[in-house]
Length: 625
Ligand code: ADP
Ligand code: ZN
Image 1 (cartoon, rainbow, N blue to C red):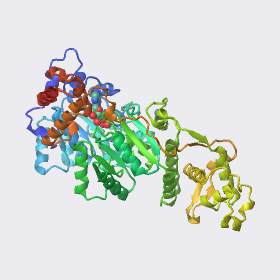
Image 2: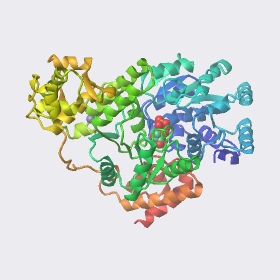
Image 3: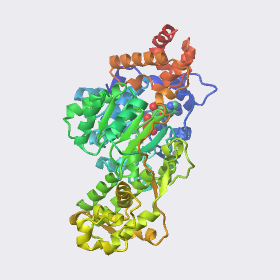
């Protein structure tokens, strides 16, 4: 429960952090080690912690899984008073609070899920100065009553800092816009001098600027991390029989592991979840059309149990803090490169190997182009949507490093990564320049009024009824493509549409017309390389994340630890990862510690967890021999 801190007599974490002798280590590091159990800061964490602890404002741009939470949690423990954390999602708040309480930190939250009585109890704790961190929903924070409380804390110097999580919610362009976030600009006016730290995993520049402006953080120090997620392996495959391809991917590489499968429609979500379940995968559906109880029950199971696969629309995602999601699969194209990056970013937050897998076909792109063409939006909107789709097509079709392509999109230069499909197995390509030129020219010669079927007949020199009727035997492109088979021509036309060189006129039964983008190719200034689609994909040596642990790890010990964790999490009614992360269990299985001191040296085990679970773990290790 959210208000677990109320049992505590005093803020134990801060007292421990402040009073414990730590001659050799700086206070921030001391907290890192003893409260959170980690041995080193990651990336910019330490600089951010120091800046905020010293009273500075900060805008933190860090990818998902980068470790944003510690950036305000440690300053919250270092500064006197309570840190107020604004967070948009109740589920997220609760899990964060549980994790903090497990680590022995006095944290609580206030949101609409609490009863009046529970809320009052939390408020009493707050007043009594017994909270290190208080998570609140933005609408709660902005109530006059709560602002009065904050005034009181300010006047008595008990306001440590404000942290604004998921700060992109203040951006009107993003899909997570929350109007209440805009009003958070009252904070610097009403509470000058109280440091504010805003955090987001949003990679695009426009949103960043909007965050700074709307939150009045123009003068805050910016901490921009690399947006690379090196532990995520990107794989984009050609769609043949997508459900079976997905099943094979799960069975071969991610058996019994947690994952998310994204589909575009609710119906497809339900069908895919049911089909996977029939085939022995622990799959559950999630979309906005399900009854609320079912939806939240599925979400809770996904968060709390091990190895659940959630099949979902993009309604499922933001705030999925689960660190051990081992794969994110797309059965449909995401809407944009930003969307793809966000969605795949939910894999591998714990830093262990994870995979982003997508099955796509040119037909999907053609369908999306059609949806844009037929949408209600104005021309500007359509132009933007088309540009976004083009960027995505560039990514899925690229024959070079996927990561390089992704990072380049976000303005970050990098080299080939060695951990994506194109790096691991460079695709074979064929030079389709000549064929593509013939196709475009055939479209032109026949008056830009026909669909692919007829055009292929002309190119292949088929004397079909329609060809004869229209007199197309006489055009100069008749029969010039007889050497290319029908299937290849079809795929080529789809690619030409997918890449925007040809436009489909849906009102004229799919007639194809040239676009401006076709000019360079027609003029001989461009080439057209296509990925060679293997007839039958042979499995290559690929191992799952869990088998990538070094040889010699007793998987059985890991399994026993996992079973113990599941049991403990159930008893305590918290997600399994709140007890320990997979990474921590793996390290225990590898190190086989015999003493509490040895166990305490493992990453992810702070003082409080050592005390609470140390004996049980040592027993399991000892039993395993
Ligand atoms: P974000 O909010 O940026 O997505 P989190 O704060 O949830 O990331 O952190 C991601 C994961 O990394 C968490 O499971 C967290 O416990 C872990 N983590 C964060 N900082 C460190 C660190 N310095 N050492 C080891 N693990 C860390
Ligand atoms: Zn690569």
